Every structure is written in C-alpha cells, then in structure tokens.
Amino acid sequence: MRGRFITFEGGEGTGKSTQLGLLNDWLKALGHATMVTREPGGTKLAEAVRRLLLDPELEPDGLSEIFLLEAARHDHVERIIRPAIEEGAVVLCDRFTDSSLVYQGLVRGLGWDEVAALNRLATGGLEPDLTLVFDMDPESALARAHSRNSLGRSRQSRLDDEPAEFHRRVREGFVELAEREPDRVRVIDADGPPEKVFARVRPVLPEALR
Ligand code: TYD
Image (cartoon, rainbow, N blue to C red):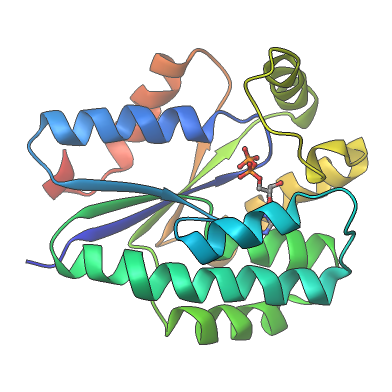
C-alpha cells in the first residue's frame, strides 16, 4: 500500500508545528503508521545544512540559500520521505517545497518558475498529496513566536528577525500558492486555540484518513 504525504506550511508563529503534532496523535490513534519530519532537516546532511542556514554569521545570498535548501531536500526525499511513503506510512513534514517557492521564489525574488524547476530536480517530481497552509495575521503570529523564543524553547532563527514587511509578503505568497494549486493546497485559519484550529484541519483530510 502506498502511504500519504502531507506538508505543513505558513509563516513563523502560525502554530503549524503544533498542528502537525496534533494530526500525528490523531492519525496514530486511528491506527495509521506515521512519520514526522521537517525541512530543512530530516537527515544528518540536511540537519547540518539547517545549522548553516540558521547561522546569523553566514548570510548566504538567495541563490546560495536555495542550493543549500535543495541539496538538503534531495537527501531528505531520497533517504527518508520516499522510502517511508513506499512502506505505507503517512508522512507529515513541517515545511517542504512550497516554503522555497514562497520564501526564495517570491519574497527573495529568485522567481517562482526557477524555484519550481529546482524543486522538481531535488524531489524527482515527488509532490505532497495534501498541503495545509496555516494563515494568520503576521503581527499576532510573530507575537506568539517571540513569546515562544523568550521562553527559550525555540532556536534563534535568522529569518525570525526579518522586518514586518517580509512577513506580510510571506503570508501573501502562501495565499498565492493556494490560488495556484487549489486541488493540493488548503488554507486553514490559524487564529485561535490549537484544538479549535485542529477542528478546521480534520475536515480537509482525505476520507481514508478520517
Ligand atoms: P523553522 O525552525 O522551520 O521555522 P518555523 O518554526 O517558522 O517553521 O525555520 C526554518 C526557516 O527556514 C523558516 O524561517 C523558513 C525558512 N525556509 C525557507 O526560507 N525556505 C525553505 O524552503 C524552507 C524549508 C524553510
């Protein structure tokens, strides 16, 4: 049996990682085999790339950044994601190719089609069955992210320090993504307590997973 591949996308502080955890618990309770992973990351090589990308001293330009991300992604897809799907798992991934389309393609200005081509090369054409975009006002989302950081539970992220305009463009980028790919991408209103948001996630899951 072929598994499923579900990705979680959205700006910082939108709560997508919390929702990923809730969906994982839910699917396991229903008897599904699941695998949880994230980008950039998921393999030794990709986690090493993640540390490079989040290091405030390195400041790669957009092109260096996308090549690092795609190198990490290729390793992650071939070693972890594709084998898990082939074994029948429901793979839940925190960010994937759509983050590159939005952050590098649109916001950093590398171009949508250019990044889409690199994504295809890195993934061998593997696409999520379903992508959930968690959408909320960036100011509230960032307030949430910053309170999380001040509690010391989160890593220092270079991209967390971007100005408000950057986060507004990220939000618009994900909305544009959903308009371009209505069959695969679902926008979830991320405002509200986790259980309330999760109640909006359940109805968009494929029938077989509910
Ligand atoms: P992460 O810790 O995953 O942040 P978040 O909690 O918001 O998911 O940090 C990863 C950062 O990398 C995040 O700011 C988004 C960025 N990113 C890209 O710019 N392009 C990509 O393709 C991916 C996967 C992440």
